[in-house]
Length: 432
Image 1 (cartoon, rainbow, N blue to C red):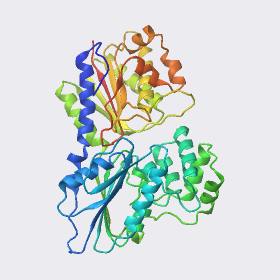
Image 2 (image 1 turned 180 degrees about the horizontal axis):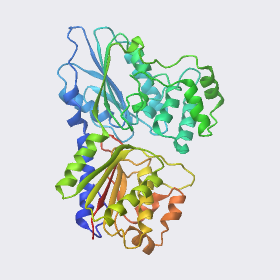
Image 3 (image 1 turned 90 degrees about the vertical axis):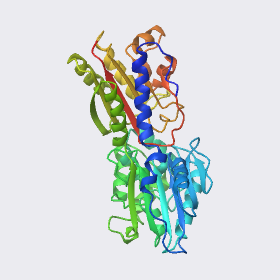
Image 4 (image 1 turned 180 degrees about the vertical axis):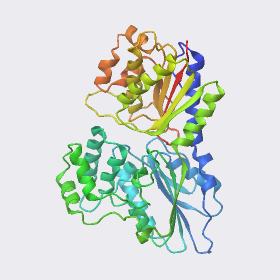
């Protein structure tokens, strides 16, 4: 993992990297998945089929292959660049966060395979964050282009993930419990790595195998709330509301079981142990924080300054999924915007931030659509930016935080991690 060139506070810079590594390791499918594998079908004619989607899907599939006793096969779809070699479970790659034809084809195959299962069969479903975009099978009367247009608008709107996925479910032929409905009468066991605030299975990858409490009416309201005008075919589909997603209590879920195998809270706990061993008091700010990224960064900067003024040596840890309202033309990512907001808040107190440094990274290894997981902020970040002729405030206003941290060589670049429990943030406060 490259953490940028060493300049100041080498120990703290390295500790920030170790905290991130601990968070990722706690959600490694090779570690967290095997204890939750179900028993194979007891009857001799029963088959075990593995289907799945998400940024961690390939890693999860490999973990199943390494731990499963008996015959197995299936198909999972993951983001481009997140595949790993497997022997029995096919891995297909597709686009994220805007879906493409490869994801549409994979989702169609997954739905078809599930529909062919019988009463004695077991369907093992591997779900992780990113699965909503990767399972891009349009609902009746809709096209992939329709879904792409709506998805792009939602991504730029600043809508939180739960609201985005309400819309996605109601434009899909496979999400919102429809995969479980297709698998009847087979037994369905879903193993989930959570990347959403609150760990709600109905939100993770838009809940393809769990009941959906949301409605077409809510999907229409969300688009209106964010002033999104969808394609005419989408508007007609949502207005008609002909085939609702299966709701809680539906008989199609009678033989379904859902298990969370990794969560953001577990990763924060693992990082907290590393921080405590390094002599910090650990303050968990929450594993489900949301809101505009730059605003949350500014709030956390102010909090860190208060802890510094109080003479506390503390590690402030948090997780969740912030949002970015795109108004500029730059290259960003929500973790970079968070850190830029934090750095600017610290910079408002000359000399007061010398004991504060931070890291913010997406645990899947990719922050948005760039090649970095996130970045770090050190006490001299703004000083180095000024020396390089950079104006962080102007860059942030243009959604171009990537230009700031790239120029300072403070990006965290680790490549795909094969897991995804959302964003990890740590602020180290050391009284000077």
